[in-house]
Image (cartoon, rainbow, N blue to C red; front, side, top):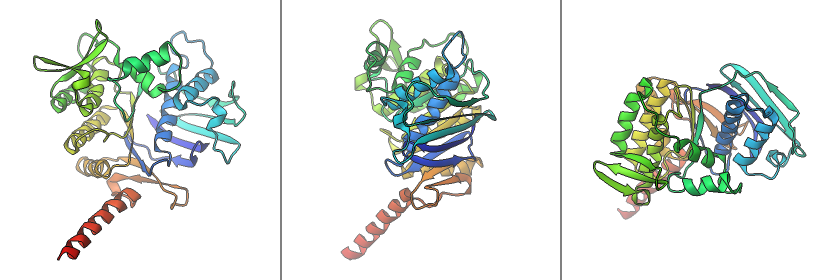
Amino acid sequence: MINKVELKNFGPIKHLDWYNISNLNVIIGKNSTGKTFLLKSLYTAMKTIEEYGRGDNPKSLSDILIDKLIWTFQTDTIGDLVNKEENSLNFSMDFNNKHWNFSFGKETSKLIKSIEYHIDKRENDNSIFLPAKEITSIDKISFDSRENKQLFGFDNTYYDLAKAIRLNTQKGRNFPEFANCRKNLKEIIDGKIEFDTATEKWYYKKGNQKFSIGMTAEGIKKIAIIDILLGNRYLTKDSIIFIDEPESALHPKAISQFLELLAELSETGIQIFMATHSYYVIKRLYLISQKKKTSISGIFFDDSHENNFLEFDLIDGIPENSIIEESINLYKEEVNLGWDNE
C-alpha cells in the first residue's frame, strides 16, 4: 500500500505531506483546490511502478513516467506541471515501505534526470481510477480516441479503465476475499452489466431482461464497474482504487451502500483513495469509521490552515471544514426562515 506521500509545487499543490495513510482514505476541499490533481498524481506514480520492469518491457523509468504524466494530465510538456510561481516540482512516495521520488523543472520535456527508485517489481497487481463520469457509455469512443488516434481528450484514467473493463471474465473461482463483496454489489444494482463482444456494446441484464446501456441509470453503471473488475480479476487484494466523486449520479441510499461496499473491499486488502465535496459522503464515512472502529484517513485542502491542508482521521471525528460549515449555514437559514414566517 501507499504509506506516505509528499508533493512540492506540483500543479496547484504548493506543499503537501501526508503521513498517516490508511486502507480507506478521503480527500476533501473546495473546487480547484487540488483534490483530483492529488488523486491523479498518486495514480500516475502507481501506474509507473506497475509498468516499469513488468514482463519484457524495455522502457526506461523516465520514459514511462513522462508518458504517464503527459497522458494523465494532458499537457504539452511535463514542465507545464510545475507550479507557475516556482521553478521545479518534487514528488516523493513510500510504497510498501520502499521509497521513490522524482523532481524536474519547468524546462523539462524529454528526460527526468532526478529519480531515486527503490520499489520492488509489481507483476500482477493493478491500480485503477474511476472518474466522476461512468465509462461504459463512452468506452468505445475513449478507447478509439487514444488507441488509434492518439488524441488528447480522454486522459489515462478513462483509457486505462476502458481497457481494463474489456478484459474477459476469468473462468473458475474468483478470489474468495471478494465473494461477499460481489454478492452485495449485485444486490445494489439488482442485476449485472455485460459486454457483448459481437456488437462491442455494453448491456444491463436484470433477470431475463436485457437493456441497452443508454437506457441504464448512470449510478448503476458506475457501481457495476467494480463488479466487472473483480470478475475479470483485474483487481486483486493488493490493488489500489482511486475514485473521483463517488457520490456522482447516485441516490443517497446508493451512496451509503457504495461506501459500505468500498469499506468492505478495503478490509480485504485493497487500498482506496477517494475525492469528494459531499457532506453526505463525509458523514457516512465517519459513521463507518465509528461503527467498525477503524481509521479512515483524510486530507482537507483549505487556505485558512497554515500549510493549506489539514491531515485528519475520521475515527477521531469530522474536522471543521467548509463543506460542514455550508450545511450548518443552510440549517440556520432554514431555522431563520421558519421564525420569519411566524
